[in-house]
Image 1 (tube, helix red, strand yellow):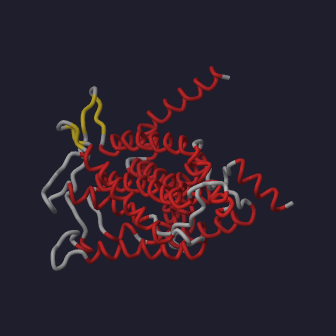
Image 2: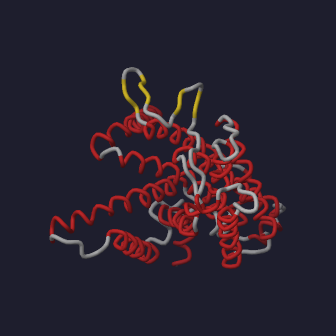
Image 3: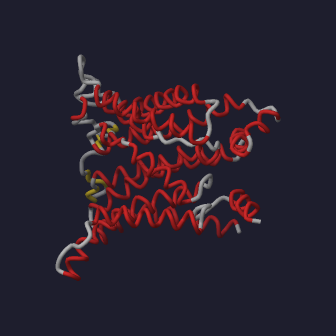
Length: 349
């Protein structure tokens, strides 16, 4: 079994390393950026999975921590303040500030659960977006709705990931190089998530999700454990936000609206709440499939000579139908954890 496991891991690693070249050769350069965004959404979904999947705290304002990390990078590495700090300093700062905001959000909501918690977190996410949108007067800090441009990419000793580089005689584009950086960060987030899941803290989160009163009676400090869930999940969101800002070179408040939070939550529900492989699968599907549906306009023209249904409307229609079918026939998700599968089986019995 060990030999097979090592062989599977080696094949998976080789596939991930070669994936950018295969995608660009078969689908084109535009799909390389989509793959990069899929990796960013995997990190976001894994962060929200800590709050929703492990601790059972419904958070609809998670995109606020994404925005905090993105604007932290943008303000510290752009002409806005003309600081241009190194990436190894900005990324931890963004994650730390996002974690601090996560704790600030969690503190007044410790007694709330379910719909009430969802409404408060939704309001928090909108407050952050509106705050960033209006923080341009009387002192211009975020440049308001116009956003911040000319953001520095990740640079290591003069080697910039924002430009096409020649490596070992091969010309490697910026999305290719960012792919490997994002992949490394995803591996780090997955490792931390696995360690948390199998730790005493992870079991405490699950206990709170199942029955908070029983968890408190068993000696679990529910206050600190819930704050830790908010802080850890927010830190992953801040890390993703910093990487997003460096990759895009531009951020604006419109990138962090309520729909983004809902999409990240849907990734968790679709894949399998509380299960890391399921969350990764859900993030990939809900990033790649909507982009693939953009080509339905060309297909309609080829078949009928005109476009009957706008591709954007068709994407949302199929997305809604898929979610309804999932809730009816697969409420635990595509790859649910063993515990949740057993819980649903017991409820049905």
